[in-house]
Image (cartoon, rainbow, N blue to C red):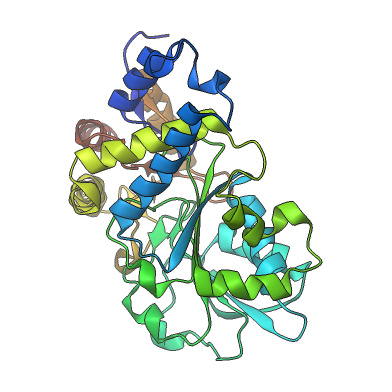
Length: 368
């Protein structure tokens, strides 16, 4: 046990900014002089409604979202969105196109398979998801109900590097951005629907951000007529995401974390900082003469999840044991791929990444 903050590289729920945690601790029992915690306020009351609408307004400011989109605050994580997307957007006479880049895109497609027809216009499975498919190799048609992508792949440590050419696709573009939203600049206008669980970059688990174009929202009304009320995007848009009781504390933390991003330079500053953090770890891998072997192809590397393996399972086990002794948390690779993974979301400090880089170098020197 320790009374000090450790180096938190967990994949999610993940690190939160210390300033945000301190603010929450200060306001926990008495929010804004109301004599109650924000968790105790009615979601129909003025205090919570201010928090709720400010979370939405800050989202719009940071991402430059135009009035052509609605911002929704939902529950159920990305896993519920795997079902809500086809429920609302996949009619019986069309197919949905899932670009497979890892386990989460596979899960999204599998859920849609229960509800309609799907196919995969490209997949990285044949190379063990080491790289994002080349854009020219991706098959799409104007008849696709939608095209679904996963922008960052936490398990394999890969990410789409550029969203520009997605504007060329003729069908609605849907993106699961759970693990990299607000980590870099984002052309929202190239997407018709974006969804993201908050627990990586923008808050604790419990709230899910959805950004949906009003044009697509209108289209869902015809497709989702027989869908349960709470699973329709239109239900939540019409009620300003207050159709049912929202996860009030998670929304409060979302608001505070977004305002922390805004106060620290916005998305451009986050992107610059995240590139610098990732470079420290990737350089340690590239300069190790093969002692550390990165999973992701250099052209597809994620700035959020750095995945790598050591020469043997024994060395991997020893690396993780010594890392834990040095107050590094969350470096185990996902059980499906093994090895190690450092998740370096927005709130992970440059100092923590420097400490991990130094540990990697010293461990290699001791065991090469």
